[in-house]
Length: 246
Image: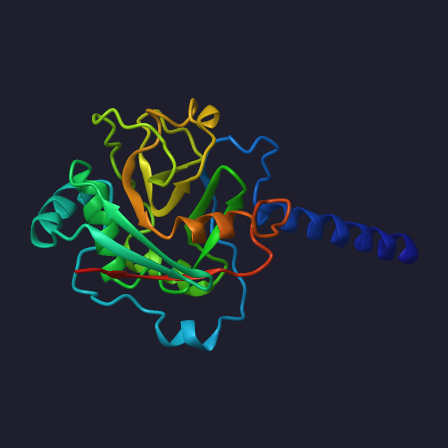
């Protein structure tokens, strides 16, 4: 009976380990035009020293954002912070973007995250050739910590009344994978669309387009074609940071 119990314990341990790995895996999509979804940050213990030095948000006097206060907060914040131009710096070059004023909540939210130092230490974490690159997540604890400081559960109301369609270089917000009939945007992640036009049918009218790339699409294309794993996560960590342009 002792031997039986011992082998049973081993089998149970192996099964449990497999289940834990499943929980933290990033869903792989066989169709590159599948929905742009958000996954929980994976956690790892090793954090680069450079990221550790800049791990906190800039201003802790702002309220914790929730679904109840986010519209009022971003409306006021947008009035006080009218910027529309941002540079996203990557380990492979810079990407300059313009944010649209007719998506005021998404614009204000993005500017807020830039000024709060959120993107520093996050990755371009999904790359699909001839489709999209997606950014704003990482497997570092600092990202989870920053989300908790800003408001990890809030979503942005969709801003879809401008009749925009996804085109080469448009920037859109990712969505939660949970049931989301109102097409609300997850605030921390965004994607840049590369094409093809045939892949826009399930995107148009469902994902808020809040900006466009004005410079650096060659960088976007280079990153989109980098080697990735079965979950479209690049084999190389592509760190990003963002700053406001005058």
